Amino acid sequence: MLQGYLHTDFRPLAQLLERQIRSHGGGAALCVYHRGEKVVDLWGGVATQQGAPWQASTLALSYSTGKGVLALLIHRLVDAGLLHYDDPVCHYWPEFAANGKATVTLRHLLCHEAGLYNIRAVTADAHDMLDWPTMVQRLAAAQPEHPPGQTWGYHALTLGWLLGHLAERVTGRTLAAALDEWVATPLTLDGCYFGLPDHEQQRCADLLKLPRRPRPPASPWRNWWHTAQKRSMHGLHQMIGFPTESIADGLEPHGIQHFDFNSEAVRRACIPAANGIFTARSLARVYALFAEGGSWRGETLLQPRIIEQIERIQQRSMGRVIALPLHWRLGYHRVFSIGRQPADAYGHFGFGGSGAWADPSRRLSLALTVNRGSGTPMGDLRLPRLNACVLKIVDQRA
Image (cartoon, rainbow, N blue to C red):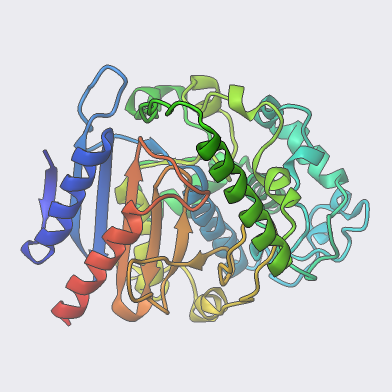
């Protein structure tokens, strides 16, 4: 089923990926770098509704996994002196100061502490997200849900326009052009887009829906059980002080059920927090840069002082939107694995199952792209299982 390249040490990882594709359906690509060497570059399964096979060049819409790529662009601009982590955003984007946002800094944005996670407050319908200028203007005028730095709330959708327009302001270029100049070209990436160009549409895998399971017949017992589950979850949220209303505010713009991520219009639009389109090869190379301390193929793209800032955990608390401490660094969250957690690793996962990350202590990076999945905003268990497998292999190699 799988094609590509595999170092023999990583055979168990390939076997696990193959089992996942067989059991889950759809297609996937997996790429791993270790000690600066590409040791896994595999793909398999189907890429389209018609059953066309996944190819070496296949791109996949990867939802929130793109936030990590966007964060790298921001760090490159900081490294160049065009941005500073603790400068107010309005220093670069004067209109942003409206409605109490004058003290919001770039660091607040990268750590999801700006209080601007409420997508429902800046959209009447999910299709508003297709209009880049409108979303930028609305976020400039938006009022935060809390004072900056007081707590954090996952900016699941809004972060893309906030960081993306900031990059536009300081480079004088569109986000797509800035991404190409500062990230894709220096790393020679073979597929890395916020807003897929028309000439690349044919490379993009279709998102395949999971088959609907037949609903069991209703019964008093089943109704009681579902009600009890909802009440217990609500009670747990109350007990830990988690504001349940923030989930919908942060994740579900009105009309999202009619928003087709498979359409060419959505692929073409620039929604950087949710519709980044990549190859696993490109994502793994992005994180290989972090795994190698900011240098790639002899060229330093991030100075040690920037890497030091990126890797420092900014907060460990539980915030809003997601009832889970994510241990935010500057733009990156902790890496989840089955079993022992890699303490030094950081990256970004996405809805549907994709994700990419680096572990500098092991000089390791891994990226997974998929086109069939469901679960939480952080994906499902496929990636954590692959993570556990690769960590075991790498530690045995050591």
